[in-house]
Image 1: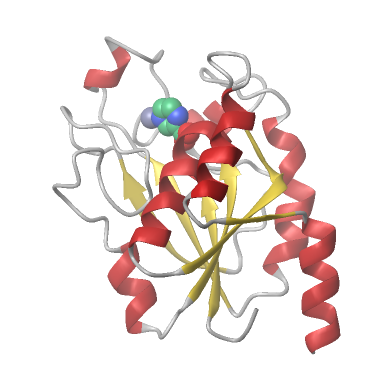
Image 2: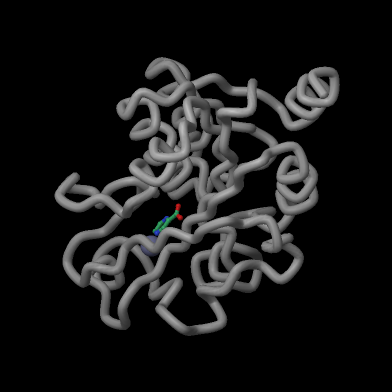
Length: 195
Ligand code: VGL
Ligand code: ZN
């Protein structure tokens, strides 16, 4: 890892944590590791799932979640947001969902995250957040596609597991695409020995 790396916090929002409308089991448990990791990065950015009321995904796949300007769409209170340089909103189109922090699911529109990172000379990205088997996975896969050296920190993510094994399969799929999978302890130790 080097100074050209950025940490991407994916959808660490109330609705994806216990008590939220699309709760990810133990979703809140990632926050201490995420806060610790943030201290080691000169650049931290975040995404928010940010749906208009009546979003098309609420009629098919998901219960209503992360509706714009609601408490469920806010970052988890325990998350340190003081280091977040910029927040990228996704899922704002009524008809097209967006799992990746970079593009909508049809790759029609970019959120601006890719250009933002490239303009700042970022070559390496580290991805953490919720949920491993949806937004973390698609963010990491798009990061690889955009040419970033991409790492996902396994213990700083949790999966929603619509089907049992989805999280495990997501890690396998990411690894096969060239994503490095690591643990926060390993990354913190590596970055401590560099500085
Ligand atoms: C997500 C399902 C629907 C996520 C967002 O952040 O992983 N999953 N919307
Ligand atoms: Zn969503």
